[in-house]
Amino acid sequence: MDTIVVGAGVAGLTAARLLHAAGQRVVVLEARDRVGGRVWTDRTAGFAVDRGASWIHGLTGNPLTGIVAELGMATHEFTVGSFQAGGRPIADLDESRRPFDAAATRGWHADVATADGLLQKVVADSGPGESYAAVTERALAATGWAPERADRLRVFYRHRTEEQCGAEIGQVAAHGLDEDAIEGDEVIFPDGYDALPQALAQGLDVRLGTTVTAIARSAAGVRVETADGAFEAAQVIVTVPLGVLKAGAIAFEPALPASVAGPIDRLGMGVFNKVFLRFPERFWEDGVYAIRQHGRAGVPWHSWYDVSAVSGEPMLLTFAGGAWGREIEQLTDEQVAASALAPLREAYGPAVPEPVGHWITRWAADPFALGSYSYVPVGSCLEDHDALAGPVDGVLHFAGEATSGDEPATVHGALMSGHRAAERVLGAAVPLAGLTRGVRAEG
Ligand SMILES: Cc1cc2nc3c(=O)[nH]c(=O)nc-3n(C[C@H](O)[C@H](O)[C@H](O)COP(=O)(O)OP(=O)(O)OC[C@H]3O[C@@H](n4cnc5c(N)ncnc54)[C@H](O)[C@@H]3O)c2cc1C
Image (cartoon, rainbow, N blue to C red; front, side):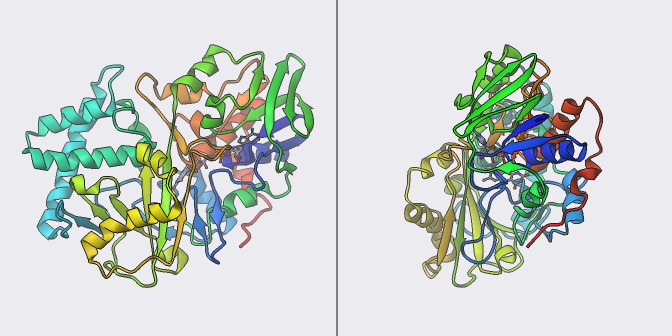
């Protein structure tokens, strides 16, 4: 065997596919009984519900844009996937759960633009060890706004951090959202995002249900231990999520050097869970991308995204990130659904119908993820992402979203990290264009 790839998510499949196309003998070892990892489409109800990733975050300059087009995957424009305040119609609700009028909406967009402008400068001037909470407070102080006006922004920043990082605003480093800018529109996948990993897996030797427990390396190569026996190869690419690495679920022999162990320790694994509620009929405004509750009334539930166009059913999707995301994992599905519904009844009236279906994720409890995606906590830095990739002793490589300094916590970051790992294994540049040769999405 030339290369073993651990993990059949987008990073692992991208690396394996490129190596295979370059003539290598490659095997992919995957603990789950499916490919895709954190791209996971649930079709039990007869339509696609993406329990992991939903969006391409920014089509412009994104390698995924061309890849999903080549695969023939249907897309639906949905440019609110990055906690935007405006740009697309949002049903904003004030602190008393009343809809914003046109002037309030304009004022809100202007306030976000003003505060974001100040924030950018404050972040650029921030010192090491400062949190995103500290810089947002400085930016808000610089606005000179009355307390209620500033507080609306404060809550918005808190929720933006919980959604984008899966962590609390006080935990995230001042620079922790630097890589968050979205270039161009965003899209989601009416037929499910998993068509991407399924297409990438076509023709590869993927061993499902194969959990890796240990990896030994030497000058001669690597030995990868699983419950079903050992595999040997010249090199290995490990793409398991950061949560799995942090938990020490794979024993490395000899131990990882500080150049890689340090980033594993310092980077954080955030938690971000999804709650889909399907209704018998629509009770909210037509033509809005999302309903957003502002101010303290938006704690803990604040944003409900209208994903009806994806399922063809009246459906809202809300999120629980950070501490709240961990907390809901301890509740029953019925408790979570009832809790997410209560503020909608307060805003839209008691006639809001009972949901006829719900889908609730628990990514922190998932043993092969142990969280949703990586973030940069206070005490870490964006450079830790790329440092995590290694290589170690020329034979051990890491890939996956957490190793992408440019685009962490995304599917395209995972894809680009797999591309980089394949090039490092080959010691040569390989064009990403070869990735989709000969395959099309099924569905
Ligand atoms: C709820 C949620 C929503 C998201 N939304 C978006 C979004 O809208 N847009 C976006 O761009 N990104 C989104 N993301 C992030 C995106 O899903 C990930 O960044 C990306 O899918 C990660 O791919 P990966 O290959 O790095 O890791 P993974 O997909 O996690 O692949 C790693 C694989 O390793 C396997 N594995 C783990 N342990 C072992 C072991 N011991 N042995 C063998 N195999 C093992 C896992 O089962 C998994 O299949 C979201 C993530 C979550 C959780």
